[in-house]
Structure formats: C-alpha cells, structure tokens
Image 1 (cartoon, helix red, strand yellow):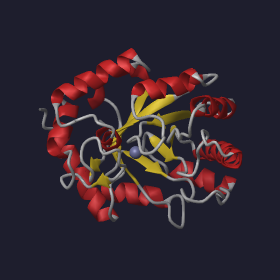
Image 2 (cartoon, rainbow, N blue to C red):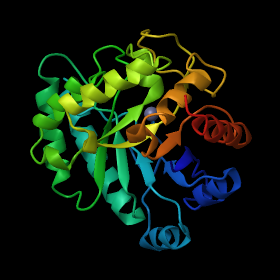
Image 3 (tube, protein in one colour):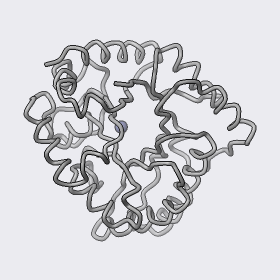
Length: 274
Ligand SMILES: [Zn+2]
C-alpha cells in the first residue's frame, strides 16, 4: 500500500517534496492554492516545470480541491464561482501533472444532484487524463455523498461520469455511520460498492482517525490512536485485499513531526493483519 500525507505548499509548490521526503511519504496530497479562498494565485509555466522535474517517485500525486466549491448550491452566484474555481483546479492539476483531483461533492436542497452533475459534465470535458475523485462525506447538513448510492446518483447525473472516480475517507464514513472497527462492516462496505459504483471506481483512501463518535455526521479528523477508530480499523482494512491495495493519504492534524508519526503508526498497524 502506497502511503503519504497531505503536505503544505506554503511559500513554494516544491515545498511539498521537501515535506514528503522528510516524513517518508510515497504518495502526496496538496492544495494547489488556499482552500478557503475563491481566487487562486496563478502557477507560472516555469513553476509547473520545476515542480514536475522535482517530483521524483511520489505517486499518486493528489490535489484536494477548495472547500468553497459547491456545484450543487442553490445560490446561482456560488454555483457560477464554483464552476470557475473547479475549472481552474483542473487546469492547475494538469500543469502540475497530478493524477487525481479530490472533490467534496457539495449539496443543496432538492435538485442538487442534477446541478452537481451538470457542473461536473462541463468540467470533465477539459480534464484530459486527470481523474476527478468524489469524496464520501460525513453527511453534515445537506451535503451529498454519505454513502455509495448518493455518489452513484451524482456519477449517473454526469455526462462522461464514467471518467469520475471515488476517494473513500475513513473518518467521514465513520461519521456517516459505518462502524469500521468491525470487520464485517468492511465486507458490507465492499458489497455496497460492488452493488453501486463498482470496485474499480475507488482509486484512493483518506486514512484519518475520528474525533467524533460513530454516526455523529461530523467531519473531525484525529491523529491515529487519539480518535475513535484506532488500530483495529487499520487491521481490518489490511485484512481485505481490495482495500489493502489502494493508495492512502493521511489528513491528520498537527505539524509535520506529528503527522510523520501518524504515518509511521499507520504503516505499522496496516502490517498487522486482523
Ligand atoms: Zn478526506
């Protein structure tokens, strides 16, 4: 299993590789700009070239899209800005040679699935080889994607939806009610994926412990060993050949030193089959 961290690009894009090397990452995830601002500072072709040259063996290289993007918003201004921001994210990913762009599907009231599908259809045209991965969510408010049926509905509402993939986040799934501490939940989960989007759609795992208890619908990442999921969750994951062979990225809190420890712990626990 190729593992890595979400790392910082503060100051310079290639900072990601410095942090990745320091912490022993094989995979890497970054924001390509500030995730809480609509306006992204542009990447020059010089910077992009430099980034690709220095990338080395890091794979997959994942970009996490801005949290502001919500293609399903009922506010047409938010929708317009979201579409522009997502197109911009796709362009940046292509410049950087990223493998995946992870996106929270968003949501709104009735009709959100159609709106999200329409938005994604427009953006997918220019995605070329880049795969956009919809991430499952904890189910806060009216956000879509708390289970695979909801993710399938979005994929089905998207023209060229076969080009979309999915990223599975352990913390979000636990928040949405999947008790990943139980081995049978992983079997149920796999069956649910088979019955909906299909196993081949899942391209990436987000490996986060959870500060919030089961089914609370809260997206609160914890460091491994400090949350509700703990060692048993990773042992269960590792005992399943499908999940075990997916790449994983940790998005746990704290400084690089703390997250490096998380990564080490994860590697250790994943090697202990349950
Ligand atoms: Zn995540």
